[in-house]
Image 1 (cartoon, rainbow, N blue to C red):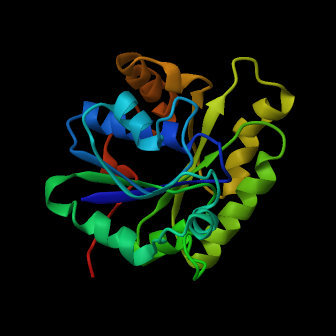
Image 2: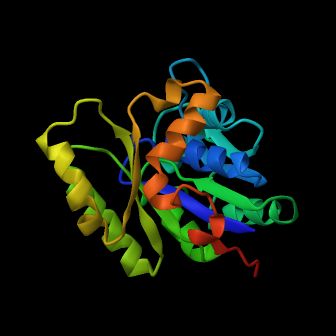
Image 3: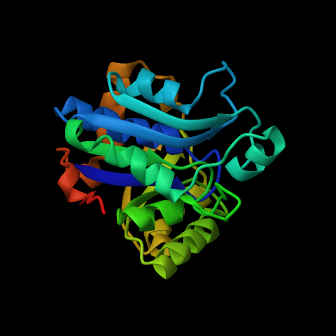
Amino acid sequence: MSVIVVTGTGTEVGKTIVTSAIAALAKADGRRVAVVKPAQAGLNEDGTGDLDTVRRLAGDVTTVELVRYLDPLAPETAARRSGMPTIGPADIAEAVSRLDEDHDLVIVEGAGGLLVRFDSNGSTIADAAWAMGVPVVVVASAGLGTLNATALTAEALLRRGIESLGVVIGSWPAEPDLATRCNLEDLPVAAGAPLLGALPHGAGALEQARFVETARAGLSPWFGGEFDPEQFAMTYKSS
């Protein structure tokens, strides 16, 4: 089984759409896929959560949510406000390990940015990736300001010894301005890793079949036109 963590340079950068795209491509190519959302904070405008979006766009994939908070806040903050329990890296690793026998690929989608706190110990999705020994995909926004956020994320990954497979632009505008167009050249430098592709703004509103086509086109620099998890994911080994 291969495991990757999808994280972001911040909130609302398109992590769920990128997660859905990876899951949809893997499923379309015959892989057994699971998506784990350790913590969902807040709901979409239509009252659904991130995993509802994944199921709508990727189809019949296994989804696992460990905890959900109503407040759209960082998980640790939302837990304090609601009096609900938090989760940590060990909880995430356990949830992933339970999927081992029945799945070829497990995608763990973080909440917010890489260093958002999950629990009172200050644990983050970076700590979970490090504990499991798996790589991450970084999702970034497009436009002015994303280079600094991406560089800080890359620095944090490097300090922790976590492999970054590359960066994906989660929402590419129909009419990109100068700063956005320059992202195509500059983001790999800031990330210290390749640009894996970009998904167009509004991709999340597409019907499933069209979304799969869009995902394959948008991530083609990464997949080379043919999806293979072993190209980008390390094998999860339970301790």
